[in-house]
Structures are given as C-alpha cells and as structure tokens.
Length: 146
Image (cartoon, one colour):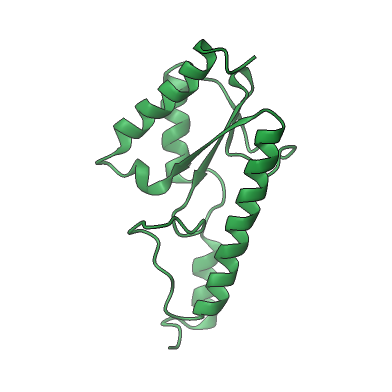
C-alpha cells in the first residue's frame, strides 16, 4: 500500500511531531507544579532522558506517546498499514531502549514512573494525575526515598 501523502508532505508532517513539551507532558507538569511538586526537565545525564526528574523524591517520570512507544492493547496504538515492517522495527527498538533505561535507573536507585498518553485523555485524566501525585508523595512518606 502506498503512502497517502507525497514525500515532501510526509516529511513536513513528521517534522511537526514534538519530542518534548508535548500536550500530555504539559498536563502532567502543570498538575504537579500546581500541587507543590518541583522537578527538572529532560535530564540528559540520565538514561532515557526522563521528561521529569524529581530529585527530592528520587523519582523520574516518562510521559510516553502510545504510538511511539508501542503501548500494548491500547486503542491509540495502531501499526501503520504502509511500511509496516519498518515501523515494527522502529517501535521495537524504542521499546528495547526504554526497557534498558528503566533497568539502569532502577539499579541506580531511581523510581521510574511511566504515564501513557491514553491515561491523560479527558475521561481518565483526573484519576491518573491524582494517582501519580499519591504515588510520588506516598513513596516519600514510606521512606522509599532518601
């Protein structure tokens, strides 16, 4: 099956996809900040370059796009009908890279949290953000964080 766009249009569309400061990421950032949780952004010294690093809680947060990170059993992850083999390889490489980064972070004593794009849709957003806040603050209370 051929692409529905010509090469120039496809290239332009792909160039418009952001890797940082995405809408889902901004929702998480605004919620945490409004609730007194402070963080740094896109820490290049940690594997996977977490979207948020909460040093006080020794926690990192990844806000993953369902498509780009191959979210299993998610209605927002649909394998493209064109260049399927290429996309499968690309997404599998991303998943492997994510897995290695999480293993390293855990070995270094970090608590990684993954928030999926689909969990921030309007119907589940509040519950997801409240759960995230509780997860972060409970870890501190239970002395999981030094």
